[in-house]
Amino acid sequence: MHVSEGELKEFIIDSGLVAKKDVDAAAAEAKQREQSLGDLLVSQGALTEDALRRIQAYVLGIPFVNLKEHHIPVDVLMLIPEPIARTHNIIAFKKTDNDLEVAMLDVEDLASIDSVRKKTSLKILPRLTDTEGIKHALLQYQKSLKDEFGDIISTEAGKIRIVTDGDKDLSGDDLKKMAEDLPIVRIVDTLLRHAIVQGSSDIHIEPMEDEVLVRYRIDGILHDAMTLPRVAAAGIVARIKVLSNLKLDEKRLPQDGRFKMETEAERVSFRVSILPTFFGEKIVMRLLRETGEGFTLDALGLHGENLERIHHALKQTTGIILISGPTGSGKTTTLYTMLDILNRPDVNISTIEDPIEYQMKRINQTQVNPQIGLTFANGLRALVRQDPNIIMIGEIRDGETASLAINAALTGHLVLSTIHTNSAAGAIPRLIDMGVEPFLLVSTIRVIIGQRLVRKLCENKETYAVDKSMRAKIASEAEFETALKTLREEKLVKDGVGLDELPFCRPVPSAECEDGYKSRIGIHEVLTVSSAIREVILRSSTSDAIETQAKKEGMLTMLEDGLYKAARGVTSLEEVLRAVTE
Image 1: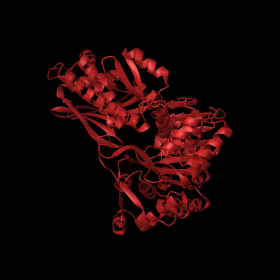
Image 2 (image 1 turned 90 degrees about the vertical axis):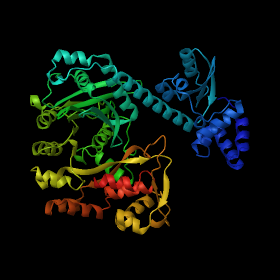
Image 3 (image 1 turned 45 degrees about the vertical axis):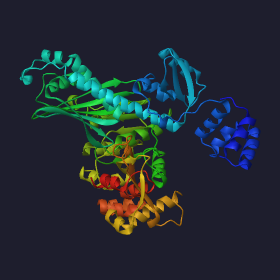
Image 4 (image 1 turned 120 degrees about the vertical axis):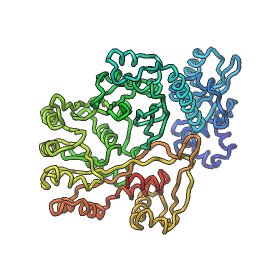
């Protein structure tokens, strides 16, 4: 938007959003730097980008529209596909016979305007909106897609050919024909797309006596998504077996497979597990977004001293970094985020995984295949002959893999891996149980990260105070004090604030957030193997003794990190307790 600096300065002062003396000072600095006054005020935090857009639009006489106040008809919204709307921040919100009004963040994005004009054959009338308006409209896309998917599935389910009651005796050819039946193809395709739109991490397709239950795991919680007629079961299983390249006529043994799907917005890999049950074959599919890049340790929930400890460990050229936690606690995502940080042109990174969950550029990834003898241990033996600087082992499952990982760390490699334990301190006794000598552990392990995932509160959360009696039911006063101390150290609360004044938040369900939560974040404990902890490992090796010493050295436990995030309003106390105690 081309607005003269003089006009812009005048209108910013008239708006009253920034004091005149501050505008004058910024104008002088902007002139000296040869920078726009508006951009400088935004960089200083004196104006938001949305406020600057409104002022510029007002000067130029461009209408401003608040999309939060508009219920956009589905047919109008869908004139611009969701990926284009999201990428270019352009929303169709009002249509007449020949005109289409579109809301944009940048009304001078002529390429996007021209693209929509060609697609719709309508005259495009650009209107300015703000970031919150765009976000609100993008949520309406999701609701529209959910409704559309529900209609498709119910329609197609009615078209399925009823197969005789001998499904178990159908030949491979019969099952293949069933898998290619158009209604079945559409139902499976829609189920997968629906799960992607919902942000699911897993799809469960469970045969019952009279129906087929479909459930999605969203933000770690299973939700019933829909029920399908029982006659659809055989066709759905056959279709997914065809996609995963599995044996169609094998119904007595479990099978594992994988396939990919590309939507307008992203590529998703589906990891398939099929298990025989009493009423038929149950399918569970894990959804894996195709890139492990783009995450940061901060975005995963690491902060302060925890973050510094991990960055220090990542700068080492030898040793082991371990991530512990149960299945589904985000270990793999943290592992890949660290690999992304380490992935530089001057290092060779090799991995051995089961399965390869994310594909990363410049990293040599090997898939375990026990059927042909390619186990973690055999793969690791081959990896160390490939001149690696950094080795990632998907999981340490047995003594042989643990021993090889330690040998790799001792011979000049940085090793990253995961282990299934309930806490960071619990990883040491687990490795000793596998047969690893304590003196080898203290020589190689640099840091152990314990983690869980908690759901994040939506924006329309409710603040409340937690008194001493309520706190006693949740955690000890010392644990709350530790969380408060961390908040003070990171300057997130003032020094004078006490526990009774510390605000906490709880979820408020809404149309956008059905249960008041959206997305997830990690709660962590980061245990650095110091000289004192080495002594404890060599002397007693119990997880309690190791954790006690680590806490003396300033380790924040997962519960304390959860309390810290609850006090920041990121999550709720109930969610922290659910994650830590489950």
